[in-house]
Length: 108
Image 1 (cartoon, rainbow, N blue to C red):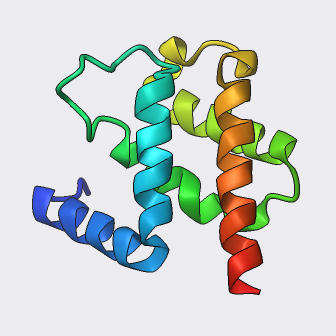
Image 2 (cartoon, rainbow, N blue to C red):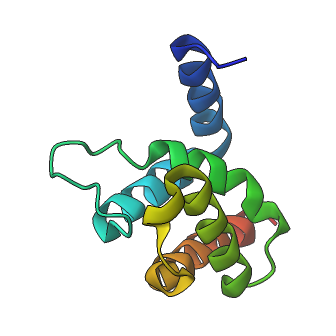
């Protein structure tokens, strides 16, 4: 069963509440880096769905390479053939790892 627009909005609201600024930072990072090529300048929320599926999986990551695997898997899931190789997302993954480490370190 497909989710309704309202269910999707509610899930995103919950993620933003749970992760706070980290959600916005990762969505913004993805938008600026634009590894998929969907940044048209005005659609600043374009990578929010991907940030929403990447963030919960970061708990299982132990390194930037793990984050790269997660990011690439999510891009493949969202964009199929447009995802390209994992190397396309390497810099983004390392920056996400840095953001995550800052968050985890602060919460310890």
